Length: 118
Image 1: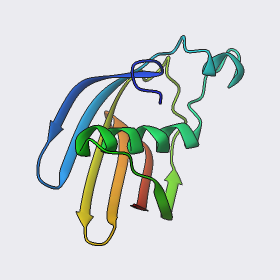
Image 2 (image 1 turned 120 degrees about the vertical axis):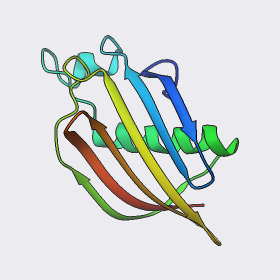
Image 3 (image 1 turned 90 degrees about the horizontal axis):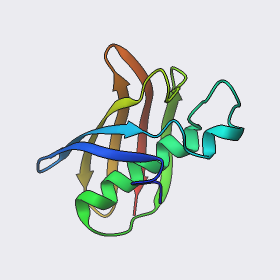
C-alpha cells in the first residue's frame, strides 16, 4: 500500500457513484531514486495502484483488478513538477465494479482508464 508513504490524501469528496480525491505525491520517496535518478517518473502501474487504493478507502474493503479495458498514459507524472494531483473516479456496480478514472493537474491529464474490479 502506497497511501501515507508515496502519497497522502489532501481531500476526499465522495458521492454515491463518484469519488474526487486530491493527493500529494512524495517526491522524496525511495521509488523515485531508481525511477529515474534526476528525472523522477511515477510508474503507470503505481498510478493504477493509487486508483485501486482510493476505491478501497471509499468502500472499506479490498478489491482486485479483473479487467483493464482501456488504459492511456497521456503525460509523464513527475512528482517534483506536479506534486498535487486530482484523481477522478466513477463507477457502476453490478456483479462487478465498472470503473472509469483519470488523473489531472490543471489542464494536464496524466492517464485515463476503464477497468473492472472484483
